[in-house]
Length: 239
Image 1 (cartoon, rainbow, N blue to C red):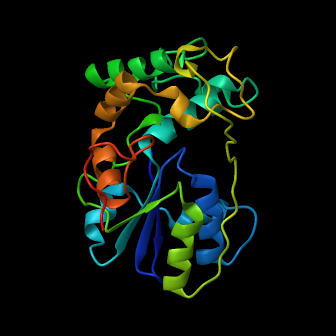
Image 2: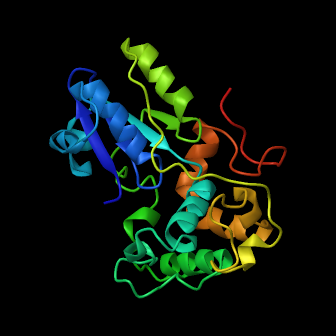
């Protein structure tokens, strides 16, 4: 399961996040909030609960930290495909490591994900939908990790705390780069990576939104438009 669910009896809440969704930053914030600690976050593991237990905790508010699904794909591609020095063992799209992404363009990467979904191959955990594990219960609150400081600030104000949130493994982005979605890693700059919108045209946007349809729907409803959707005719964000 892609999600990490952390239970807080003090706050009557379960905090949920997924890989490539500012997970390390959120873990360090939770470490301060729940355990009063700095640095190593291994102690949080004892607070984790399996997703099968969510229904058994109806009085606990379920808080999901969510990333724009399109930005999440670009972040994965930049970190695990474009960069040669980082976690090469994650440079596969599926859990069985049959679909190597090393020499794939971003367009080929998205088409591989579409193939995996169509034929029901299991994706590796960085690429599992963010709503996986929520089949038995919908989140009560959805907060954006693309505006993480604001999201954490909202919870700090509610809980009466000042636990800061550090930015870990933050990807830097530069100006747009034409046709970035067609290039393989040997031609794409990695520090900074081209602006996320550089990796999408209409066809890729439609395909990616279809792959992650449930994530897209809740993001539009609870947070707002996706990458590049400002001004487009999409579902209205909440008022």
